[in-house]
Image (cartoon, rainbow, N blue to C red; front, side):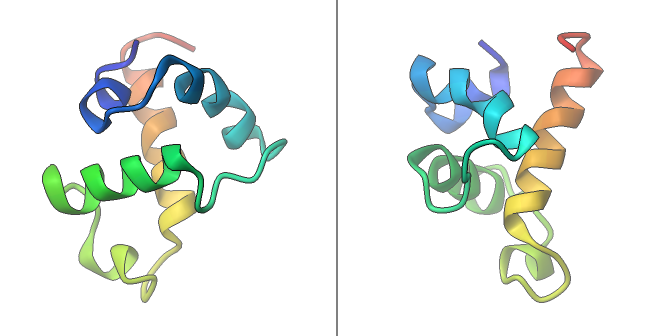
Amino acid sequence: MNKLYENAGLTPEEVALMPSYAAGDVEFYDTPAYNKLYEYLAFDACLMPYGVAKARTGDPESWILDFAESCISAIGMV
């Protein structure tokens, strides 16, 4: 399992759904996976920009999915 997902506390079932969320096949917003990743990235790891976390300068949902995809691509899992 990806370290990001592990650190955020995603279950194996939630991790398995991430490609469907990224592809737009399944709604990501307000799912347990979204909530866990939002909390982890915005408040625990402090990686999400403040303006994005507040939805002022960007969309948190898109930012999380893009960030997760970039993490996976960086470690060669795609």
